[in-house]
Length: 419
Ligand code: EPU
Image (cartoon, rainbow, N blue to C red; front, top):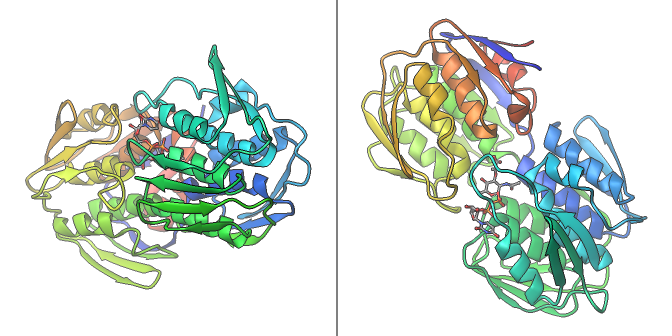
């Protein structure tokens, strides 16, 4: 089992090139199944979740090869429409292959992605939307069998009860090759939805309205392959900015999606950091000591404050001057990192969906176990700012979302090793 060993107390400074977005790359890899010819994807982050997606593509008969950050996917021969339970369990976002397989083959057998690290993550909205598109679905013992009687789903009007990212992606993937038009009301507006639609348009799909709450899709018989560059990862960006801000340092982040990061940047700015943006660059200079954020930080669907940035900002604010209050509105169990931060000396009280963070004068190195991807990143940030040595285990969670995080930290002058 690998671990991170971090010796804290170093001020981080330097320049980083932001990795490609995990949460864009995964649905786009699934979407390549819909094409009749090869897709070349640039800026794919080298992450365990991305390799899990490529194993799913291989399992259904597609070739997927990587050279550095470029993936070439040949979706020519889909020979199998069942994805094994083992592969489905490897990452929770495997569920987006359901819409893609339906769009490609009109049928699929998948399973419910198992036990959850952020609380229950039901897929009821995915299933009811696909049923409305004429997909017959049966569920037995966690196995989900889907088929379309005519071989193609049918376009229809769908209103999501909540703007779920995954449900919006599954409907889009099923609708682009469906018969007729689909309208998604209350669609998710996350930038990764726009990136997926941008890719699909480059493959010949007819989609409008993404980025807003109402997406219109005109079904096409077939899509073709294309060459596409995945957008930068706004959550990895939020993580490195929180890390450098907490260390009282200075950062130039390049290949950054500045507009898409605004909901996070506007909150980070309230900590007293100086932040300047231009095109695809963000410059941050931290304050001598961060200030607490005065307004309650409420996680919300985009363009609200992103739930994925809650833990990393909390780690930074655990050393700020004053009290900050978080309200987690997207997932039920997204404060599991607080135990490790408290062990390192943070003063955090969790009451249901609210966490009250009283800034401490200092944190101390400790042994901690990563509980989930973003929670693990929060522990890395706390360890970088703590006095002494920390050991972070179960780093497989962190490797799901951050490309060589220890190299990025070392590049900025931090002391972090993988053993
Ligand atoms: N929900 C339902 N029923 C459904 C679908 C969702 O009740 O059928 C609930 C979920 O349980 C959750 C809320 O709706 O409480 C939001 O879920 P959503 O479907 O929007 O999230 P997701 O698609 O499962 C994606 C990201 C997450 C990110 C969320 C919210 C990917 C692969 N995952 O998850 O990213 O937190 O959107 O923005 O895109 C991460 O990167 O660490 C991560 C967890």
